[in-house]
View (cartoon, rainbow, N blue to C red):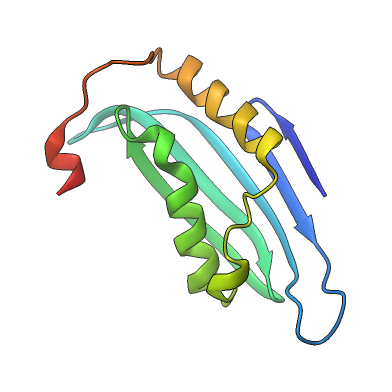
Length: 120
């Protein structure tokens, strides 16, 4: 199950058997200013994964804010979700809505420049 409203995504899954995974994850985000990176999005991923409490903030600069799903996947794996299940954002219509909201908040459009140093 997933719900989305601008600035908030909630994804919940209950294990169907002992080999399955459970999570109840919230991703809150807002425009923020980092002293070194400038304008971007501050994300806070919180809730629980596999029964383990989770509270992980991360900041992405304006030109990387679209890449939030990669950070979410890495955090999910860090908290015990096996790689086979770690794409907890597979509920595409909600991630698509979040992606569009981030795009609007960052005033980005296709073809905007990026800082190559962010991808080294």
